[in-house]
Image (cartoon, rainbow, N blue to C red; front, side, top):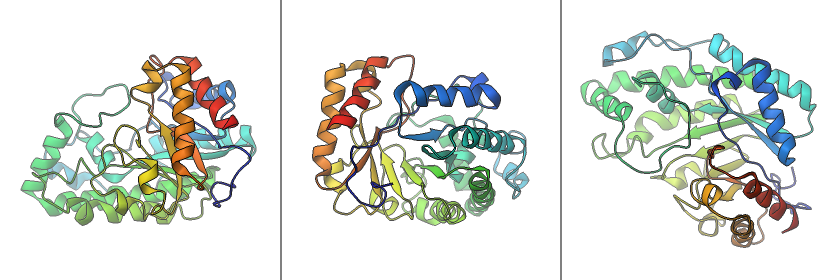
Length: 320
């Protein structure tokens, strides 16, 4: 709470997160998986993972299929599984740590709905070739831009209702994941994110405004980082190491608390404990007089990351 209020804490809070196996996405196994991660490293805040999906219609393969999307109540089965997880975790934690539950924004949700193949969640690519959902959504925009904009608005309103229910279930806030480099492409046209997506981001955050621990996760390589830095949240998280900008570059112009400093893609899986500790100390030095939350730029792959590296991150955060 000291960091969120801009005060220097006794030590820098630290946390990290990864996707769990499919059998741990909801129910008692999900509760146990979250609590085990929290206890194993004595983490200072909890990002509640959300791989339960969006209660959308059948496969979306054409722009006309978007018409089937309607505004939801926010408590449909897929949503309900996450709400039950939040409620159970809140009961177990009794306020001992702040807890923010993951919500993927309307564009990321729409992108998921048009995927033709389902894959186990993993750390996202920062750069690379255009993927199938991106190609399909670009075709939709070229065919009927208004239909896509309406779909984003409908999904955004549904997610806003879900966000409000997450707070009612016991979450301290939401962890809203946004990404504009999927949208602001040459094919889609400049300013597409502003025109189509940003309003739905802000609508979701408006619904979660009662939360005391709302984080914005800027995924990928941000096209307009400064626009995201103005969002009404308590903290902002991004891949400062692998995508930029660096913490030092933005501390004087970012209003929310900074959450980051650790490279989840290369250093955590491939570095040594000493290198991981050094990176935490460097992040603190970059932040200068501003306190920060130590965390990764995004999820990490638990199959590749040695526990010793995670322990080193925690130890450095608590002694720097």
